[in-house]
Image (tube, rainbow, N blue to C red):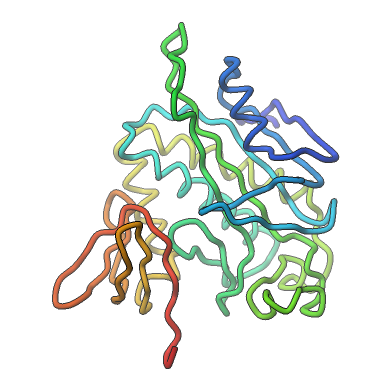
Length: 261
């Protein structure tokens, strides 16, 4: 990968989880920039332990190892950087209307899911001898060529998922999309390292976030609440108006509430 930090690309026909692989590599001292790409994952997972299966070789399953020099409280912006880079890459295929459903899904104009992002870090990191920042591994699964039609989806996903190829009107080259994604990720990753860059990530998330202006239900460990998402904070958190006040959501499962539901 010329002119980016993502030159070490490791490819697998099948692996349990590209995130798991890179977390192990990080514990062994691997540097920032290692990329793992798989045709198929046997234990791929999303937020809250959810799983996602697609035919081997149809979609882009990729994880990147990052070591951002950022305080723990700002590490959620790593997910933002990856999501924005994926939006950039998909738009480069000519597909319009791609947006981010806060905090970690890419959706089309109709709200159907195109991709999901999952960031993981070692909960007990071993300090590197050279003082490098602790690792964060971010995985993304992009529906590139599956589903090829709505009829491919199981009944429980009907109308809820879509592929880049469906929106583009024909097959999409996964390798070209990977190149576009890693190229777009370079400046997004660089933005993590400075206050102005992090502010830019927050502003770009606000511009591309389909959740803002939507009635939402926020599910938290201590309970749920509903309100209207009114904005994104400078730190990248979701701001929700509810009961005459506003609440800032740092992390949680956010459901877009449809009228009448």
